Image (tube, rainbow, N blue to C red):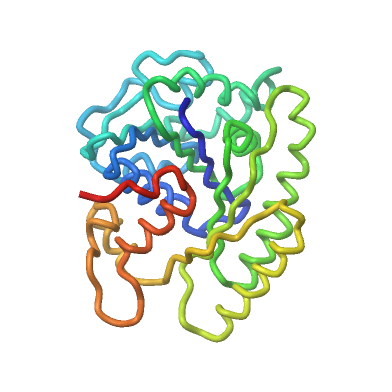
Length: 269
């Protein structure tokens, strides 16, 4: 059965798409069969990596037609496939809102890919809405990047956790909300960033298991922006690095091993 992970946050611009793309490519290089799902109206993930084959349909076709036929595109990266965002006008939001099973349909449809993939990663938009609800409810696990900025930290505490509490009743429809993990993302070496990180970890410890902050942190380095421009996974882009900050390859591998402990023995080629 494929493990479904939704990368989510109610705040935009926190790095969800970059994290989704880089984590997916790393898992693929570790030998996992990975499916990326672009559930954002702004289809950044859909163009993050070059495609060798573009399917006729995408997420809109998958959900509204309940079909698996010709919805999966192939990237240039071995083992990494993609369901593109094909809803530039945002009509899918309204369709989900007014469909009786709209918010839980994606969960059931993705289960039909269980024999084809090991991991399914779902990217989401940075705003509360029916499509984000559907993506969250489709997941076994939730991962939220949190930049160590006071506004992002507050929005994580208020907005993201509030969204999960609002969706809890959906468990009566067979769509329970999975555990939420936060990853400190784009952290710099300032005192303020470290202070916010400490506060987030304190809140996590006091949340009675509602949220877990991962030990691995992702530093604010130019490699993530450069690799995105080059349409290359960051772990391939920055293999080594001088100075006290770990190279992106080591950081992403540590994150993958922590979040997917069953892959601890998996190594990159």
